[in-house]
Amino acid sequence: MGGRCPVELEEEFIEDCKRYPNSYLVEKYDRAISTITEWKKTLFAEGRLNCWPGNRLCAAPPEEEALIIEAEAAMVCGDVEVPYHDGELLGYMVALARRLGHLRLPHR
Image (cartoon, rainbow, N blue to C red; front, top):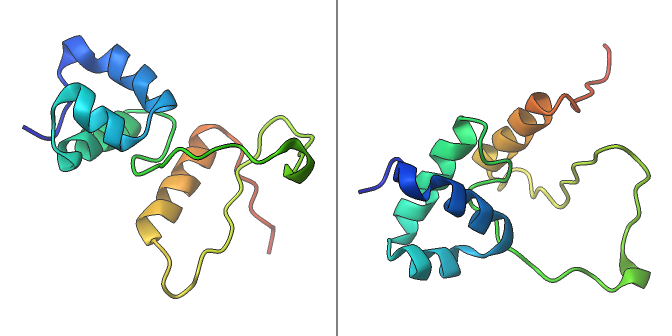
């Protein structure tokens, strides 16, 4: 039953994805993690979910440790671990940056 989130659940599911980790979504929607991931990937591909489908929520750092960026938008990707990186994740990040119009590539 993967693939697509049922239409009647879409809006609630999208809101829940912004707030809760996958473990909560698995319980709430009584679906396998693979199904939750497929729902997220489908909604992301349609431009309805603006977060990486495999994201994990984490606590915000204390304010004194936070990096403050004064910009309209920022996407930070650190410790990519090339050649052991997740190419799919990096592809999603580039696609999202392009979709939001915030991708700036250096001129050659």
